[in-house]
Image (spheres, rainbow, N blue to C red):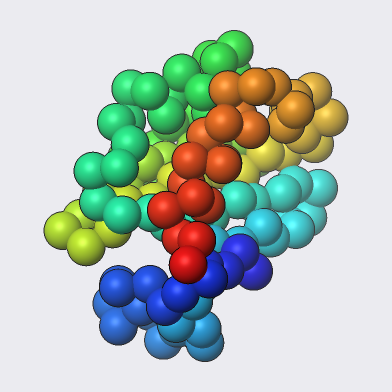
Length: 120
């Protein structure tokens, strides 16, 4: 679980299975031969085009619109936005997971920007 230093203002809108912490901003979840990243942040903090350039720089991930069924075989990502908070969801399957560079300056900067707004 990825948590904030302070309670997040949208914790009351989370699904009950996700509401076990009012400090939760995301999670890194292992899947069968894959890894999922789910992270929430204040509405309008980030622009989808900027996020796309950072999350999928090689254009190797499939983008799924919010509410659509995702792939169980391919790596994918989505950007969800609503009135209270926005989210990035990303699942990297085996091949993409092995090749994905989590040390890139732009990736690290994006994660730092998201987590910085949650610092107390």
